[in-house]
Length: 278
Image 1 (tube, rainbow, N blue to C red):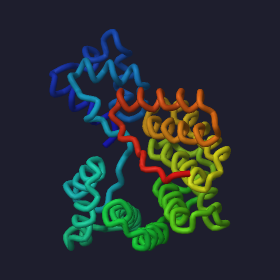
Image 2: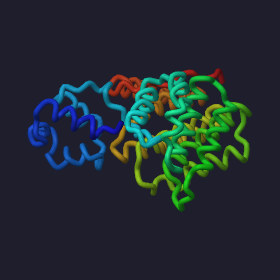
Image 3: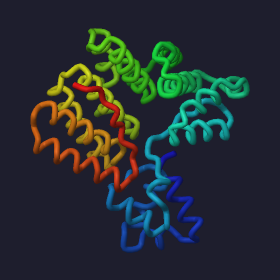
Image 4: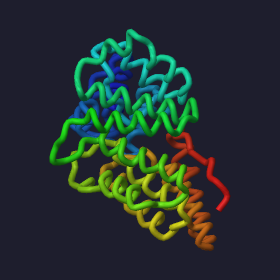
């Protein structure tokens, strides 16, 4: 779920107008833009609004989810299970006949197979099935001049799984990374794009190409903050700390670790820390 609807619902539940909720925090026009997902608030602004509305930051999930069918309750269930990291339950849910029957078009088919791949990878730990479902997701994508967000996510996810299996960045993996990143700074912004930089950096971290990993993390952090977002920053800084540590840069590692802890504390973003020994 995006930020806007959550804040709007909390404001309405509190019986406040936009002007009342925004008073001494931001303009009414800015709050309106936030509620309509036309503007992403920075950390300080988001915290102030959440405090005004009595809303826990844990209730905010920034990355948008994708519709897998025509039924709103099914889409909400997928979002709920993903946000809670209940991947085994997600896998069971996605395999229900009623869920499959609700898929109506190519975009929903693409989203369905993407989530199925995520559930296979995270829940069942089945890398082969996850790869196959990512390929089905990509095959269902509408061909456009600028790759949509979900296509980029499927590409980089496929590259990451392939890297884990082969333990080296092959030309095919590099091609998927390049495809996921191509034109990303000029694409219409979506917070899920922040993930692309992180996973690309993680791939090179696994391949012990630490300088390239650091470059991608720096680019991703700049990309994220330039769009007034904080989604994935806790993870990006954590990985940057690991990269700096591997490069023997103790001060940089400590600084990145502190930043990761700060964003984790502010926004409750779960930090992936299950890294192999380097």
